[in-house]
Image (cartoon, rainbow, N blue to C red):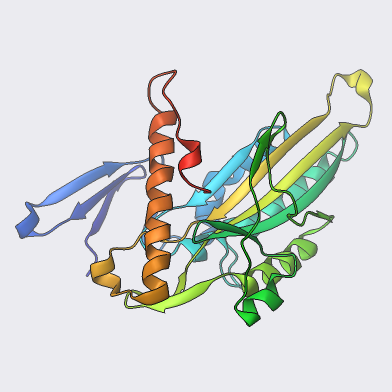
Length: 270
């Protein structure tokens, strides 16, 4: 039964049933109906790709309950790609169009945060995953130039196919599991990061060198233990997931609050 209504492109109305006193209305920048296509979602975030090439740091992530379609939206199957690869294809297309003005170099890294530990998805993680020994993970360090993760594999890429190869390798190494609400539940947060370095072909035209990052993030889903019936490793994973998502919510709330409010970045690796 479909309990949603979309009176405007920005509004969604949820019929919560008689027991919960009728309908609830929520307003967003954009709402997508159940029959919306991947391309429609991408068109809404497409301008961020241009901003990335203009030197702005960008972050796009999918957030929601387990089984709600986050991985499908961000990654998608080979025949119907999601935000990640559509964004990457767009940036290579725009960079080619700007080749007479700017020289761009792109590097890619791919990591996951599993049980509050950071793992490199493209740096030999496969053998460790098969053996069950994933190690203690990588450290996150802050400095004058921002956040860094020593030991994280960073690969120069020149086309979409190279990125697809890295993403495929990373997806094979990512932690997944099953529970009562999702047979193929992501048990970690995955972060695909592209770094762009651009230098002007001719500095006399007023263009300046840029360096920026774009994070494409597939968050693990929030879980209510009573519904997933998780036990053992699944329960430990769910607790880590919920804690990190709660910390993320606190950070977003603090960033949107009064100027000078403490932002609790250190409460989670995420």
